[in-house]
Image (cartoon, rainbow, N blue to C red; front, side):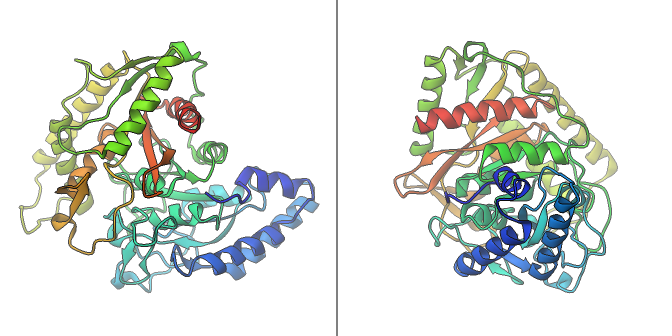
Length: 439
């Protein structure tokens, strides 16, 4: 992790007159130009308009205005509409599509004073844990260039981890915020479903509804910036974290899944965290009769996901989805939500892997053919969706928290999940987890 200033620190320095928005934008542009050549994270650059926005921020400051992000340079995921910039989602057929208005989240960030310098890379259709597409090429992990930066918000996470910008905006339907955050050693939060407005995060040339389970959310190099961005983007104020002493926490530690294997280095880190929580007085369980059937829910999630992202259109392996079939899937998701609500009657949070390994080598085979090597044993890469599905399928909030590195020096990240609308509880526990991992 770099030592560059965070978003709040930058905004405060500008407000005190120690620097200017123009100077911070120029410094961020210089970092992008210096560091991004080998990484390829910031694939749409809007430096001229960014500098004009920085000048406007300085003018606001001279008029006595204040805003939480006034003058802070940042980038956003390519899939968000930014007026005047392309939104392609990596599809060559949409290479020429230019958005004519900002996404709601982008509008809110600009209103808070953020200076948008460009957009960051994604996989085609946002449908991979690697950020590579035929328009912009491949994003590489800043920690080890032959490894994935994650996806689909891979460019976002890489831009943060390399210190080019302090703040980013991502989206998540299958770990697309949390997996890149883990692979790059930064913070990411998948909010409760529908807590943040996703308008303007549309498939190119469309303006329909947000798919089930899909959310947008904040990504940052430090936790305080993550919290600020989440609160700025929330449609309504999210409940504050409950005031809990260490001994009040009831935590479920999950180190295994019936579908997705996990590397020993990640399990060891989770167990060390669990031991630290127990030593502080927290109740930590590793088994519970209340835990939903994870294998069955993963199967339900995959069917729901495939129908949601294809909008039920016929595919090579299935007919078009009927209304009755779709409503049955919605009913099944509702049952899963109720099962997790019951679970969280006994527990405050789950701590679990977000992916079974650290960042894996680039692999250009079709997703369905890829094999992931977990402690020397091959396993289908696609099964790892089971870990992010823990949050996506029942609409739970989840915070990806960096907790150390493996033997190759690659970041290890885990996720903290809580009941719906308890986003700040997840973040509060993630903070404690991070502190334990660093001690």
